[in-house]
Length: 520
Image (cartoon, rainbow, N blue to C red):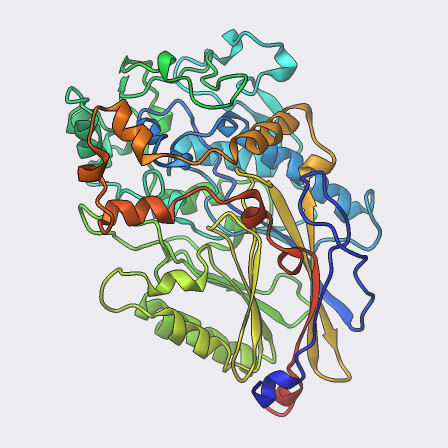
């Protein structure tokens, strides 16, 4: 073991069995340090318009994320999670859990649509939210009103004294988080995602041309209406016998958004801070000091692929050379000059940076090597993979990279992170505690969790997809093809993988910075 890692003390322990059924462990030990900053991380809420004609529901046999039985409940899960965080903040659930801020690490919405983003902001702000689109026929769903996820509801919102920050994700930027949006038309209602057209053609839906593959269209290759629940009650699988294509009520509020609209709607919020970290007419990256009297700088990076090329689906993260050299490095230098420590936030984990995108990018090794050479680096938080995972990145100044699971998929948890400064040694203690809306659910968030729990083991099948559309699986998905690789990369995580092990969830780790005392 390298000498600089010899003093690394990692004490992992789970503190409580959550209602999610994730790992249980012994009580977390009490350790030293003064709490400087405590915040909650939520990620991958995927607030979505399940009725949008621009979604890829027909690919549900291939990709789980194309259709989920719990997706109509996404806004309710976020609302219930915020209620739990509010209770932690006030001490209603446990003492000494005041939150200095909340950060959402990307994929606020599912399909980069305006109405989805308005629902997200509405839930965060608190107020009346109606997660229905088109004809607003959710009121005709044949369930009791208290069990109807499509009706207007009053979101509690995050408490006004808790500021919240935002990170840009691939689903905030691209259709289905994968397909480039063409925004050349003057009216955003006319923006399209061209790659949806060959998808429709492969499925034999030739009547859906370029002009109709838009979320604002009045016809859909997979009709879902607010008055219909396509989930089989017994299995939670999609009812293909109910799936049709054809005319639907159009809705201009479904229009795609671009980065400028994403920023504008984050400023169109009544909660603090203004823009939630973003700046008008600027790249979707920024830095902030969340707590004025604490010298910790939050540096948020945008890892959504910039201007993805035509014909190439891209969901993975990209670290551009420009952002790395012209923004990240100067932020660290400015933080050193100000005597500040640094907390990094991205949507994608750094392992994504090795995946192909093109020239002028920074790979995983270079990114990690730079961060681990910075004496004022504390931790890197991210999402995207819908799992809880902790990685200790080695280097002169080793640091934790912490992934937090999604609110759309099992186990639908948030993470509370405490940063404790140990003055005697100049080290940091990073403490993590998972929290779940399932511990104190609303009626509708409980139903979402039940559906996510039941649907999690169901793995999409290329064979089922090929059979459904009368295709030959061997020809469609040869073992070494890009399509086969994409299916593997987008497979459904097992419950164990999504929850993470004990050390991925509730932990207390020492981040050694004693040797940095003279540098800072």
